[in-house]
Length: 468
Image (cartoon, rainbow, N blue to C red; front, side, top):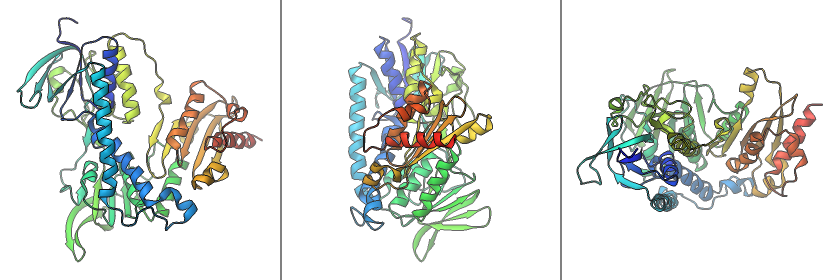
C-alpha cells in the first residue's frame, strides 16, 4: 500500500463516511476524508436526520403534544408557534453536532480536504477546487469508500420553487408555518414531516400510490399510525397517483393545486414532494473507476459492501435501503474492517429501525406478514401503554408494544413498538433476539417500576396466555 498516497480515501463525511474513516485510522491506516461542503456531517447533520428529529422534538414540546393526554387537546406550551421558534433549537443542535464530529475526526488524526471528488481511474481521485480556492489535485489510494449519500429525487415536470413546492431540504428554510400542507410520498421522510406538521395544527394531506403506509413495517403498527394521523385531522389519500402539481393564485393568495389521476383536486398552501432519494453519484464519474450503479444512482454492493471493483466500497444511503444513520455507521465500520482484513461481526437482520413520526415507531426482527408468508407458527403478545403506570404518568394512553414468538420453541421473533420512547425501548428486545432468547425471559425478569419497559413483561404474559 506504500505505493499509494493513502491507504484509504473516504468520499463523504456523513455517518457512514465518518465511521469508516475513524475505524481505518484506529488500525493505523493513512486516511483521507473528502467532503464537498464547508462543514462536516453530510446530509445527516446539516439537512436530514439531526434537523428533522430536532424539529420534531421542538414541535412536540412547544405544541404540548406529550401533555395533551393529561391536560386536554387544547393544551399548548406556546401559542402561535413560528418557524423561528422551531429553528432556534434546530440551529443549536446542528452547531453542536458539527463541532463534535469535527473534534472526533481531528482527535483520530484524519486528514480532511474540502472539494468535489471525481474518479480519474480505479485508484485515483481528483479533488476539484481542493480546499476551496486551491485548484485541483489528484490523490491515489489502495482502498476507496464511497459514502456520498443521496439527494431528493425530482420530477422534471414539477416546478419546484423552494417556497410553495418543496423538497425535504426546503423545510428548514420556511419562514412561517403554513396553514395547510400536502405531502406527496408517504415514505419515511414524508411521513415524519407529515406527523410533525399535523401535531402543530397544520391541516395535512398525505398522498401515496401505495395502499399502506410504510409497507416494510408491521401492518398493525402502521394502522395505529394512520389512526393517530386521522385524530390530528390529517387526510390520507392512499392508492392515489399525482397527475400534476402547479402553483396558483386565488383569493387566499399564492397556493398549490394538486390534481390526482382519479380526478380529485387538492389545494394547499405548501406541497412537500418526497418521492424517494437518488444516489449522489452523478458527479463522481464512477464509470472511470469501473463501478456499477443502478438507475437511481445507487452503488451496487455485495454483503461486504464491495462494489463491482473489489477495492472500492460503498456504504450508507448511497447503497439504498434501509438508509438509516445507525445502519450507515455500522456499514462504514464493517467496510473499513473488511478492506484491511480486520475481523468484524454484525447481524444485519437485527438492525433496529427507528422512525421518528409522532408517535415514534421502532421495530426489530420479523413482522407478522413476513412470518405468515414463510409459514412460521407464531403467537402475539401485546401491551398497551395505558395499562402501564408509566404510560399514565407521561400521558401516553395510545402506545403499543407487540412481541412475536414461535409457538413451538417460544423463541422471540420480532418486537414492534409505537409510542413514546419506542426507539429506546426497542434495544431490550434487540438484545434478547440476538441471544435467541424466549418469551419466558421477560416473564422471569424484574423491570424497574414504574417504567415503560414493563410493557415487555405485560406483553409476554399476554402472549403466553394466548397459548391456552
